[in-house]
Length: 488
Image (cartoon, rainbow, N blue to C red; front, side, top):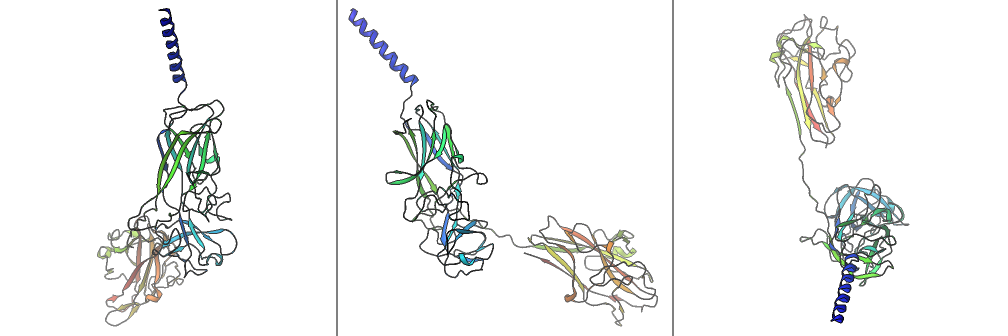
């Protein structure tokens, strides 16, 4: 009986010790859960070569249509910064894509340098991404380390850390900044890594099952453990303004960009756990997949528009003031297509006005011009009222005061402007009056904006005619031609 009791006591103590150990010593090797790598951009990088037909000092680039990861412009976009290789010496030179003509050509922002114009020179546009790795650790080892592995190229002719996109994996970036001896993008550094715990480092490539991988490590300090069953994140890469990112691959060997049934290129990544002696805990390795594909070019056309009209709004009330003068009592007779002075007051200023309005979506804005088809004439006899010279100092291009010459010794016809919301004032009534130019060749600009207007722009044009007491009686007429032109 005593022996049985002793055995029970020994067994109870043993069970207590086992339970205590398990409770206070988590398993050292169990795969993490909820593992995923989220990329800030999954767009493939672009790698093409100069094709035949490209000439130095031109801005049109022909893309070679065979033998390269990119054989068209399907993964190239307006605004992309591209690097074009040099035909002599190391390095690349940077340009900006201004337009995509079709799947074979694109336009750059400046003339192609002679050293870049050789057929076969590479054309690259790197796409990079911040990788955010989510996982929930299921084990912890004091002083251990967590590693993230992502596919790197081992293909002959490709360098996994030169800043030039690879066909078999992600590129670590070059130590030399963009535009120098190698590709675009600077190399990923420890400062670009945010670890959930421990200290970050970027190691050399590792070979796993005959495939090369970049290795990013978060190492815990001596005696330090990580929490378990708590979701954490590891962030690889920073915004390019302050750091570096892994460069996405170019199209894989069996991938043709822009094909009818575009399929993403799939790459393997791994999350694995090491003990304090850097020994891999084999059963604590999780493998995942990420897909990289070209972006979809979405295009739309906004048709160019320009609207110009003439009306009588704000000019039809008799005795109102515009252009620094009082309008004639016949102002109510003004319409959008006619300016009727009626019976003129002799040896006096007769003033009427119209309102001009213009709007366009052109990036270069608009211009409004006006000319007269001839001088104002008596429709029966051909006797004229001459174009004004104001008080003796104005013409079709130069404005001057017109305050004293009111027709006692002659008759005159001219105009001035009052700007209300026009982007660029050609001239305003404060500077005086002008004569109309005769014929289209002498049309003069009266309204303009060199940018796209934010809203409709308006100005008043004020007409003035004087007639002396000896001006031949009769009905006089003239025709004005307004032209609104947008700059696209």
